[in-house]
Length: 638
Image 1: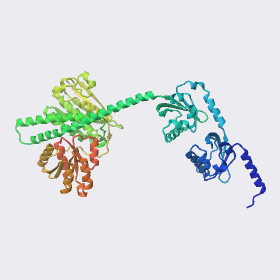
Image 2 (image 1 turned 180 degrees about the vertical axis):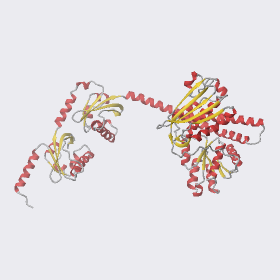
Image 3 (image 1 turned 180 degrees about the horizontal axis):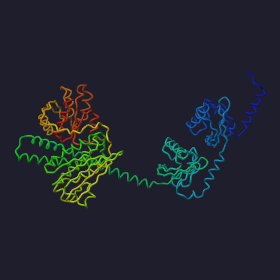
Image 4 (image 1 turned 45 degrees about the vertical axis):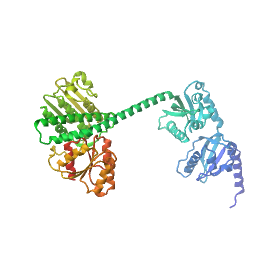
């Protein structure tokens, strides 16, 4: 192809003009390659035109390769139609061949054949004048706060003399990128901070001012805590004002250490209470169990009276243990409320049935009034509801010698439904001076109360904590020597479950035989004897394993058992590990054997862990005879 001589001369003239100008002219193609560079580039940066062609410009003239590649990709995406073209001027720093930097104001225009023409004018002198103007503020020389002026790229263009006084750096050491290179622990941390600062100060959707705390490295290598106040300034700059708060932070750290030590002490206390509870429950399980067994035999009047007294004393001791353990769990925030559908009507009558014998022994009338429009099924924590009811009703019966105890249950509200319960008695009442503290731990109506009626004063404290756990309130009205009304309420959801007529299930008869083959896994000999005695009376065939390893071997060797009662805490191998092996490693037939966990304290974490490893159910020790019997009947029918 022949070239027109006139056209060739014109191109040579244009090239000579471009090369004579003291500006940078670059041409970039769709692949991001630099295809042309003017001689003005060499005058300003020291790089030859050949050095910057292709990828050279992006690798040599930026502070780091990542920044160069980012700018190249923006131009590529613009030329390929992925980004809109912008005619805005951009000020940026260019790295020169001698290691210095020059400030250049860049403009962009679209050329022929899908190219981008990039023009740059040296503005280093103007930038330096801007720095000088900022330095001129004499007031900045006397203040203790750190004052730093930075551009859009977060490069420092001014730092107050206080920076050197507080941090030890001279102004020259932190100008430009020096601040980011010297005061941060790593380059990655400084990059993150730069990005956050740009979003904070220059993004219009974000508030232009904010306060933040950061650890700043001093020139001596130590650290100081600085609290920063950022504000957008003119000409695409921002001001950062910092205050040394190191002494305040030291005080905060001391408080945190003290808090952690207190929490550690509380944790040790709670662990001690939990372990103590377990150790006391184990022999108590045997005492109460054999007392029940003896009460089911033929006894004369005197013997029965002695055993019933033993049983009552055991119940008091068990209640005390439960209260201490519950209180420690609540104080440590280890109890989380559950949300499940339960039969409110039935649950109320279950609690009443548990306490009606005590009321009858004292000749008290026990009345229950569930208002007509009270929904039967609600969504809440049935276990906590029972605990609250048992404590309030138990107190009412204990402190009432003549008269009655009335329970009122209703659900109020249309949209925000609240369960409301009132427990009213005709008992000894509470002195007016004690009402404000009656829900405090270890508080009772008067000094003689514990001696006459027993108890520790923990019940009402637990009630208050449980009601608060359910986002509710509890209150009391009382007249001394006339009676009290305790009222609690908390939010519930009404279930859409079918509202069948209420029918209270009678207690199962313990004399019916449950002929199933049971493996008892229990390390305590007394508990083994008690369980063997009880289960044999119900017609069960029972085998005993002393620990988890024995249990696994017996399940593997013998014909499948109908049920396994598995203690959780045992030496050598505990119940969790034994259950995992039975459920996962002994074949499909043995995998389906129901395993019921036996535990002395039913924390939610223990129950969840038991169910997670494959256990079907759990039962508390000391055993409630009726509950144990019902579980045997239930699993004999599966």
